[in-house]
Length: 231
Image 1 (cartoon, rainbow, N blue to C red):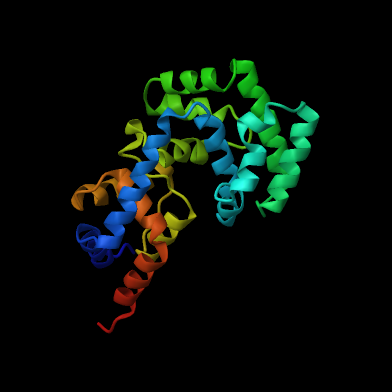
Image 2 (spheres, rainbow, N blue to C red):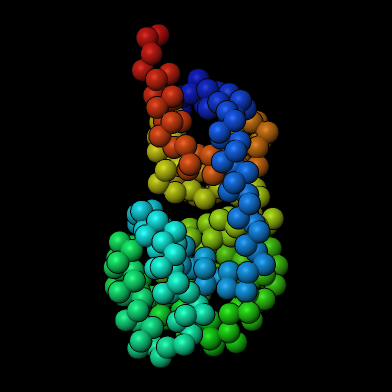
């Protein structure tokens, strides 16, 4: 049975955010500065591959400057397709990215897709020219390894205006749903549930999404404390 008391508790927590949570939200919104990067699509593909299955790969691939420089678009452009593949394999392994061989193949193929589109600048133009949220999601789904979830999350990662009122339902958010004793049979109902909560807490859907991801353990701990407290 859905627990309305827990839902109310979550709304209350979200309506009274601590200074560190507000600070973190602002830091995440600052990624919108990257919207102007010529290589933004390639960068976002690298970020997606680094976190897919296990977020620790982000530290090893994106935050490690030496590894990142190895697989930057500019660097890989200088090599043949076969050499690119080898570089991607070696770098993803070194960065401890999950499924490095599969992701290296996907990235090699995605590099070739970008080249067929006319290069990295042209690909950026095409991506940002897509009208509306659904079109932008469909554009990203043409890249290997990018399904509906990551196609949506890619745009949310850069705080794109078309995605201010979105929730990317992932495993961490599903844990919150479970702690609330709710269950949903489809994505749209699940997302609407959280969008309604965001509205009650005077937050964007994007803000709620990022908060539940960044502070997942803390929210779950507090909800379980209420659930397990003596009646």
